[in-house]
Length: 391
Ligand SMILES: Cc1cc2nc3c(=O)[nH]c(=O)nc-3n(C[C@H](O)[C@H](O)[C@H](O)COP(=O)(O)O)c2cc1C
Image (cartoon, rainbow, N blue to C red; front, side, top):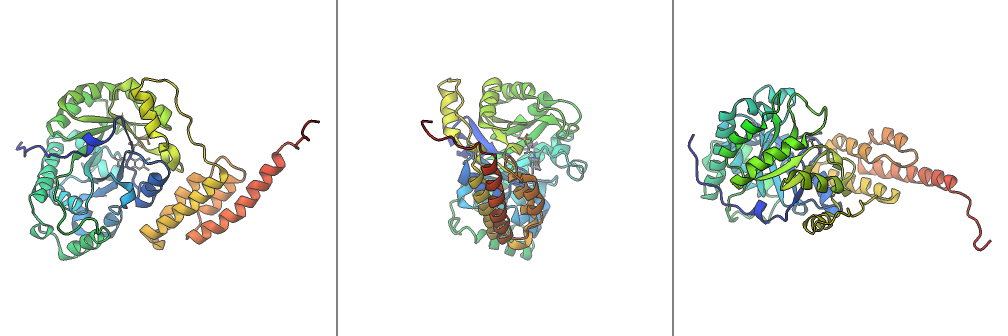
């Protein structure tokens, strides 16, 4: 297998360790959500939803929407998936051209239409193809860095136009942008139908990504059972001596749990996925947690618990950002986020049932106004009657 020179980039090495990042989640970690997370918690790094290389290279609108980002989110890593090496080569150019801080290859998606076609976690069964994809992607990054333009690739004019439009959203990424190579990373699982992370990580090491993120389940497990952190620890131990960082992933709900997992497993950091749903505050306090780990203290700083008012204003802010970034026509995708915010206050279930039918930020504002009064009235009624002071 031919190898091109190791991509020189500094992003992952300059991030403070341990790294605590937002995991990629299709249909969830769009630009609006990542922006919210950046405003209310600020993880060290965020990943886009996975995007199909074919869709990127043909300039499909949905693909390009998932490659939207805002400056506040940086550093932001674009995650791509597929199985055609030439498309990875081209998609790498597009990701670089759009100004992303890194490129991640999905080798962990278990969903039927992805894995059974040989992409995502399907690649665990075809290690030589997995290596070829890494090689071609790195070559794409390198050639782009050496000055190759999108015009020199055989992309359709309509794709070039769509990509140029998306790039125009980033005036900071100028036409004469500095073409520094971006780092390549991989996110994967423990194996296909059994834990084979030992052989699988030996293969991935040959592809020399800068980071390997490991979700501690196999493909067959989907999301059942528990993430196997012992297996992640063993893999980290094997991989790290090769100068590759390891991020562990699976079932972390708070920064306190992140700290415990980092301590036990020796990983260089963790990614939090589902623990952030309806909870962009989950990343609040990362510097304190890092200090706690570095000074070997055991006292975990308290986790932020949002007030009712904070939850309501975040719902409105998120809806507003979503509409502004992704457009009112896609608002249905915002509804599940609104539902996730609804827990832990009076009438939350009733509010959730109404929020999942909203079509705009204005609808959300109206419901918030209605439910704020109802929730506060219920809370006031539940308060014990105040006793007079000094009685
Ligand atoms: C709705 C959903 C979508 C996901 N989409 C992606 C994806 O696009 N790319 C990826 O690498 N992993 C994806 N994952 C997996 C997560 O990144 C993560 O590995 C998994 O949820 C375990 O971590 P957690 O327990 O912190 O959620 C997805 C998970 C969920 C729940």
